[in-house]
Length: 128
Ligand SMILES: [Zn+2]
Image (cartoon, rainbow, N blue to C red):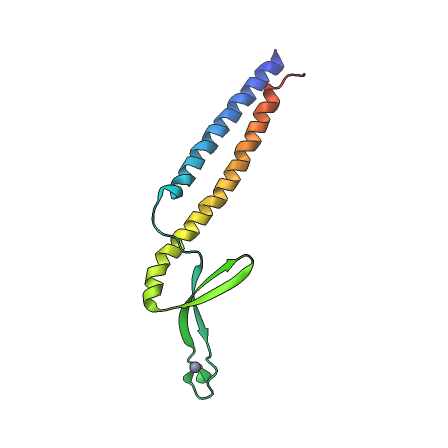
């Protein structure tokens, strides 16, 4: 009887955890309902020398411009951007980052939910 009560307490606690995890999952999945476009990659400003022998960059005035970087199938890519492209791409790149963060949280939450389900199964299972 005592073990039965204990298991019931554990089950209640696990169900509460499951409930909380599902609520959190629902919040995280909000990103899936947005329709704004995503652009894979991060924006960086880079400063470099161009290589021309008498350019001002040889005296320390480096050329600065924005690039979009991303990797695909383990390969790194970089694209130079005009100021107009920077303005256009920045929010899309931010949205992409937000989406990927949410996706990573979904992975964690799904693992947690499965672990809770396994514990619930364990508590409910009787000897065969
Ligand atoms: Zn230069």
